[in-house]
Image 1 (spheres, rainbow, N blue to C red):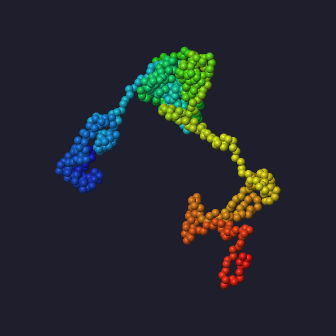
Image 2: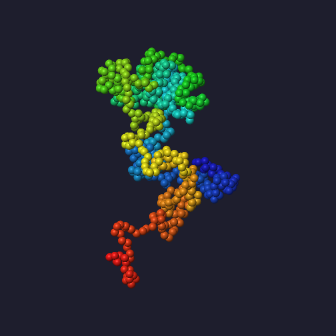
Image 3: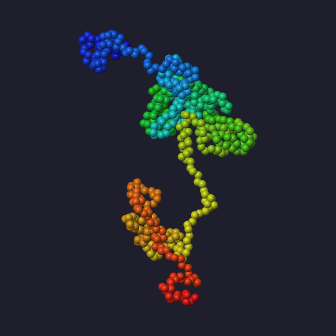
Length: 561
């Protein structure tokens, strides 16, 4: 029985005992007076049980039959076991013509144990205790964020944090989370603290080979090879929650470090890396805790600095061809011919690619001189870029597109050395270009070109009225006459928006004329058509012959004949 039913029983009992009127009960129950009388009659006839809704406990009149439910659930169980309720509803309608609501099918599947709710699917991670000694496990990760807000470009912060003490061991701003950036960070770490027991990271391709059955390679990444030579173990976590210490400090740094950089007005990576050591000291004083055991498991370096630089770099072997050439990073490396390189054709050499951009080719520890022929000057077409390096790759592509230019293509005339010259018109009145004009209104000016045009003679037509035009210049007014090209609005003329109404009115008036406008041709120049005249030594003018009655006197031609 619901709270509404209990309230109705109490109020109707007060009405029946005379403590409340029916009108007052209707106001309390928020019902009409007539409905309150109906409920009171049912209460007096059947007691409190009569106030319960009569449809309670009965099946809905709109429910689907049991056969449809069994058929739909069986289809999902046998054919669409891994389908969610939404997709299964669409497939049942499309392939089996079964119309079922999404939530109805969800309830059916949950009742039969074929679907779990989001709350039931929630997993819980078992907490892991801290390591007991400093330097035993160092968690590393990269955080891509707008560290300089709108003052600079987004970048990645590499974070090294000790698991036992929550102490920040290394912070470094880099363009992206790449092998070169981690090699540089590890170089700074081992110089400052020594070699830890292990690094704890995610499954990024910088740390592990995601294809264990790869045909090429040694089954180890460049960073993994360098850490193996330094006797440092690399462990990859199965989830981000497993390395939650570095994930949580990333969230803290995205709040505190961003504001500290804003207060210091730092806008780029180089200035940020200078600022980070002081920030790390303040952060560790506030948040670092002592380890459970006082031992420090960092091992001091036992190799010279030159050897450390050779370890923390890209190092690969390349095959030398018969022409003493090898390929590396879309470049063709040509070895200089000397006593060392003469016998290297058909053998392998070591290529050292350092994070600072240096490239060395060695054989048995000896440097080989070379020159580089670049095959490509851009990011390789359809290159596979990881998600963590996508921002940096797009920035490189954008810079290449901004610096590219369209090559100038010379025509055949330009290839042959042709130079365009003005048209030369020579005649009795020809004046050499540059000659000063002695007389006339343009006296003292120079002839501009072979057509005898005057320099800087700015001729301007001003529309003084509809019928009158005036030609103005720096010299006295020039005489002119107007040659009318057409008597109507030009066909397909371009009219401005403000003049469109006027142009349409002119065109409408011309269209309303009873006759088409007369188009003058030679009449514009005053030409009068005359008959064809032929003059020559035998020319005889034609005289009209008159009848005998009109002219009895013979003509001179007749007398001559």
